[in-house]
Image (tube, rainbow, N blue to C red; front, side):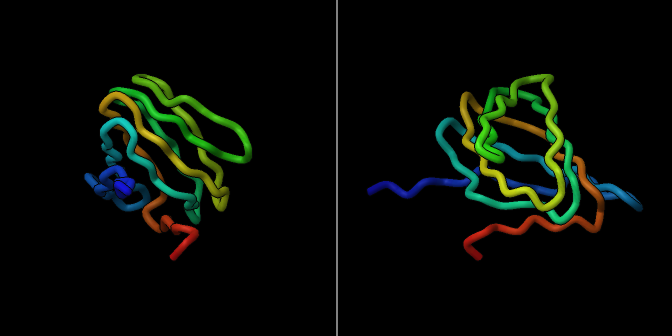
Length: 99
């Protein structure tokens, strides 16, 4: 059985109150259930992905944006060479549910 790979997550910029995280993944990668301790804004840059949150699916495409509320579990599956920026409070932490 082939292991499912997760998208790459990298902090690319930090300031006094905000940080920007780059999320990059090839088609079929999956980021398991997690949440952020503060709200986050996801902005699609390239490709596409599906965000699963509160029983609904949200498509993230180039130029689209989505706000993820603090403490809400969600997961992400990437398609078509996905690239997005996530903007969040500098003190925000991402917590994966199975850790």
